[in-house]
Image (cartoon, rainbow over all chains, first blue to last red; front, top):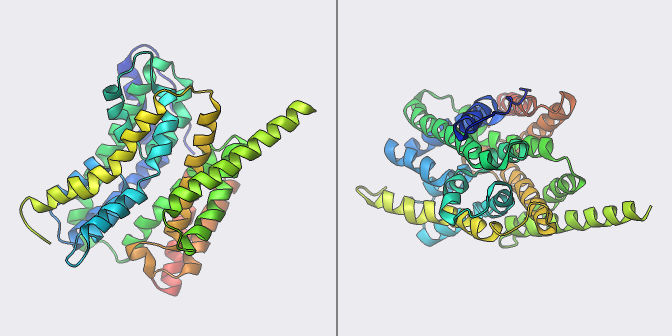
Length: 247
Length: 112
C-alpha cells in the first residue's frame, strides 16, 4: 500500500499538483489503465473509430456506461433503451456528487465553477477525493480534485487509444480480467474508506440487497438498493448514537 | 455501425447526456448542503450502498467477456480479493491484485 503523498502548502497550483501525485500513486491509476485498455479493445471489436472511443472516455468517464453504449449501438437495438440503460448505470454519480459538494464548495461558489470537478467524478476519483480533500484547506480542495480527476481522465483516454491498437495482440483472457477490475477495486477501496459504522453497514446492506433486487427483476434495482441500503445504515447509525448518548 | 457524424451524435445524446445529467443534478442538490448535516450522512450511506450494488451486479450479472467466466470463479475471485485486502494491511492494491490472480487462475483451470 502506498502512503498518501504529503499535503501541499501555498498555492492552488501546488494543490493541483498534489492531486496529480495522488492520482499517480493511487491503486486507481492501475485500475483506470486496465479498464480503458479493455474498453479500447472492445470499441475496436465493435467497429468504432479510435477517436470516437477516446472521446467517449473524455465525455462519459463512466466505465460500465461506456461498455453499455458500445455494445448497445449495433443494428437492431432500440436507441432509447440504450440511453435508459446508460442513465440507470450512471445513477451512482448523483449521491457521490451530492456528498462531494459540501466538501469543496466555497462561499459564493457559482454552479459553473463546480461543473469541472463534478465532471471528473467517477467512483475512482470520488474515493480518493473523499479520502484526501478533508485534510486540505477549503480553498485548495477544488484544485486538488481537478488535478486528481484530470490526471486519471488523461490516463484513461490514452489507455483507450492504446487498447484500441493493441486489440489483436491482447490475449483472450484480457477482456474478462479488465472488466473484473471494476468490481474488485470498488469493493476494496470503499471498504478501505469506510471508517464510520454507517459506511460499513451501507456496504454490507448494498452487497446483500443488490443481488436480491437485481434477481427479482425490480426496475431501477441499483437506485433502490442505494436508497434502502443507505437508509437502513443511517437508521442503524442513529440508533447506535442514541444508545451511546443514553449510557 | 453507421458512418459519418451519427456515432458522435449517438455518443452525445445516448452516452454523454444520460451520464452527465446525474452529475449536474448532484451539483444542484448538493451545493446548498452543510458538510456536517444529517442529510449528508444519509447521502454517504446511499452512495456507499449503491457502489456495493454495482459490485454485486457486475459479479453476478456480468457484461461482455466476463459473462463467459463461470459464476464460481467470479465469486471466488471477489471473495479472494477481499480476503487479501483484509489480511494484507487493508491494502487496496493487494486486494485488486489477489482478486485478479484468482480470476485468471480460475479461467485457466475451468475455462472462460
